[in-house]
Amino acid sequence: MNLDGTVIREGSTQLLVPSLISERGPGKIEGRVFFNRQMAFNRDISVALFHSVIRPRKCLDAMAATGARGIRVCNEAPGDYRFIINDKEPLACDHIQRNIELNSLENAEASNADLRCLLAEEVFDYIDLDPFGTPIPFVPSALQGMARKGILAVTATDTASLSGTHPGKCRRRYMANSQRNPFLHESGLRIMIGTIVRMAAQEDKGVTPLLCYYADHYFRLFLRTRDGAGAADASLEQLGMMSYDRATGERKVGEGKMGPMWLGPLFDREAISAAAVPEGLECPERVRQHFEIWKEELDVPFYYETNEIAAMLKLSPPGREELMEGMLAIGKVSRTNFSPTGFRTDRPLEEVLEAFRSTCR
Ligand SMILES: C[S@@+](CC[C@H](N)C(=O)[O-])C[C@H]1O[C@@H](n2cnc3c(N)ncnc32)[C@H](O)[C@@H]1O
Image (cartoon, rainbow, N blue to C red; front, side, top):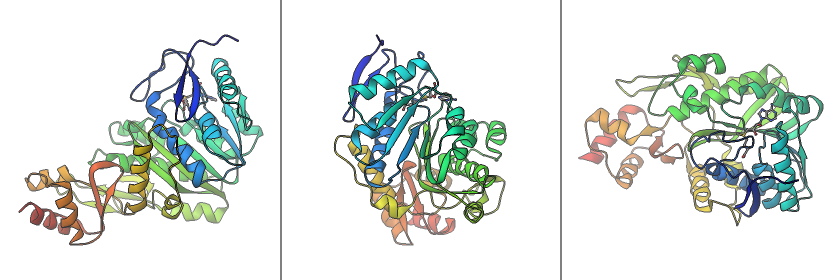
């Protein structure tokens, strides 16, 4: 079969991709088969987790386009697992087949089905959803096709509707209230997790984050799922509301109009601490930096932005080192992967403001 395209290398894997592809941003749909170079970091994280953190046996890349993610994992992460790499578009499935052959993979199989049909018939213990925009319409099928214990991985590019830009859309899709704020990607991600927790609870399944983050223009979630009413109740316990006061900068957790959202940890520190950065990734330095921050990032919702506090106090923002030292003098402080200029602390806002003033003096 003669497929139009170019063979590129991403990480240590060869991929036949269409000649016309997206280079940046959420990616434009250029032809019948989609590929976005900017998602290489997202795929690198999947490879790293399969290397050292997760050990599923039967995996589904449910919306695979060229198959880039599943193909890379199979080629770059050793292990005793099998991947079904699926797309409903027949031409995409031809690319998947060709990419399996290009990399001589024996643990991957191309599939051409609507994921809803596939997941009505087969059970997997790792399911990856990577749609255009919101993943919510596909979550019920993924929950239905998930083993008793499994991992649901989700990419969502509709960050604007979750982060307060379109509150009406957020209410309709995610059954939650959003509001624009300086930590909008954290609140958006927590709303998204909260919605999946509630959907899973309807099926008596519990959901807990293995690793959830924001990067570039998307949210990425790796969620552990487990069958049982007790597990579902325990996950629901971690949902709540919050409020943000624009005038004072105050974040109140557990009360307010924003939410419901997940208020528990965004990642499992113990599991993530075991993560190694394998050789041959596409963006190894960026992956290393992210794991370094995740290993130290405080589990305290919600982070502060240096510019936000500086503007409130009408002060010039201090240097990064000075700020971290000033905050360390009053309590715990850490960087956050949400923003290079953000920080987390376990101290209340009035102490943060005082420490900030002292640092700027
Ligand atoms: C954003 S692309 C996936 C990108 C890919 N995961 C990657 O890393 O390059 C979304 C894909 O989902 C496929 N898709 C949409 N609805 C689907 C469905 N119901 N079942 C299976 N595939 C579907 C589309 O054909 C498209 O190729």
